[in-house]
Amino acid sequence: MPAPIVTVAALCAGLVATLVLCAYLTPRAWWRRANARALAVLTVGTLCIGSALLWWFNPAANAQAAPHELAAEPLTEPVRYRVYDDLNLRDGTGIGARRVAVVPAGAIVTASGVRKGDWWEVSARVDGREVRGWASSLWLRRLDERR
Image (cartoon, rainbow, N blue to C red; front, side, top):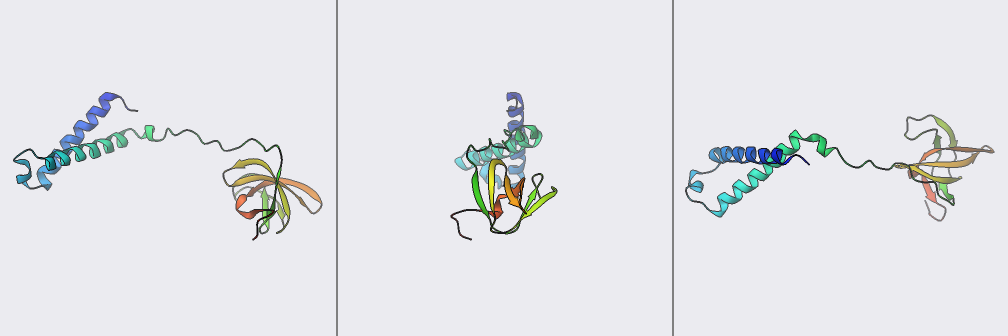
């Protein structure tokens, strides 16, 4: 939240900018008497331009969102999924990570419960050995789910 003086300064600058724009962009007859239309134009213009100035000159406040928790606690009971199509198990998240193994379509994988976005840590039996890695959840189906 910006300091109150900054907010007041931005709204004053918005009012001045609105008055200048109204002087050039609206008919003179609108401003001979005070009316609701003139009040609405000044209010909306001041708020819009003042808010834009606050946003423009205080970008750090816009980027102060709370960090998103990427990894969850592992599940107490592993969940099993069927592989939709040949599945690349990787040593990290993302398609740029090194491929550890390829799990064939129709195989069963077990999710550990650790997730980073759409990437899940899973384990599977490939060529008789147990392999653990990261896989895109888009290629997994519940055991009771049809293709």
